[in-house]
Image (cartoon, rainbow, N blue to C red; front, side, top):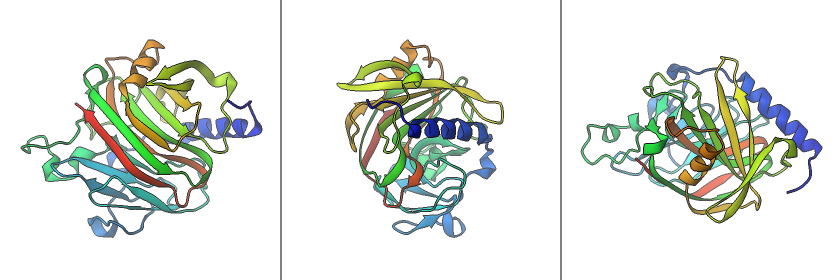
Length: 284
C-alpha cells in the first residue's frame, strides 16, 4: 500500500473524534419514516429518515441517512439497490449512509412489518442478536459506484458482549468489524496496521485500535482494508473475517452479532454514491 500521508493524519483525527463524540442513542432517537410514517420508494428521503426494503416473507432491510440531516437517499421497495441523491457538506465530520440488517440505534429490521415477527409462519427475517459461534453462514456480495472524494466504502458489523433485547441495545460494547473495499483520499496508517491476512483469496491489512464514545462505551475496532481497492465484491463468507478477528483476540465466539451494515463513511463528496446488486443472506 501507499506510504503514510497528511490525509492519513486527518483521517485518524476525524475517526477518533467522531467515535468519541457520538453518544449512546435510545430507541426513541432512531430515524422515523418520512411523510407521517408512510414509506416512500424511488423518491428522495432526506434528513435522519430511513427507508425499509421488504424482500418478502419478512425479509427486511433498512436504508438509513445519518445524524447531520444533510443527505438524501432513494431506495427501491423490493430490491437492495439505493442511491445517495444529495450529500451536503457535513458539519459533524464522517457520516455513514448505509443499508442495514439487524439492530441500528434501537431500530430492528425484524420489527419492520408483521410478516417479520418471529411468530409469523415462514418468516425469513434474519434474527439478531445471535451468538457469533451460532450465527450460521452469513454470505454477502455487492457492486457499487463510489462518487466520494474522501472516505471509505465498507461493511460495518457490530457485536455486543452480552445478549440484550433489540429495544434495550444502545452502542454495542464488543467489537466493530469493518471491511473497507475502497478508501478514496485516504492512505492507510502503517502505525495502525496490526496484522495482514488473506481471506477467501484476497489480501487485507487489518487496522485496529480500542474505540469509545462519550457515553463511556468502549469496543474493539478492526478494519480489514482491501489491498486492491474494488467496487465489486464477489460472494464472500463473513465468518472468515470473524474467525480471523477471534484468532487475534479482538472478538469472542461468545459475543453477540447485532448488525451487518454496508455503506459509505463520507467526509467529502458522496452525491451519486450508488449501491447495486447488494446481497446478504445466511444469518441464522
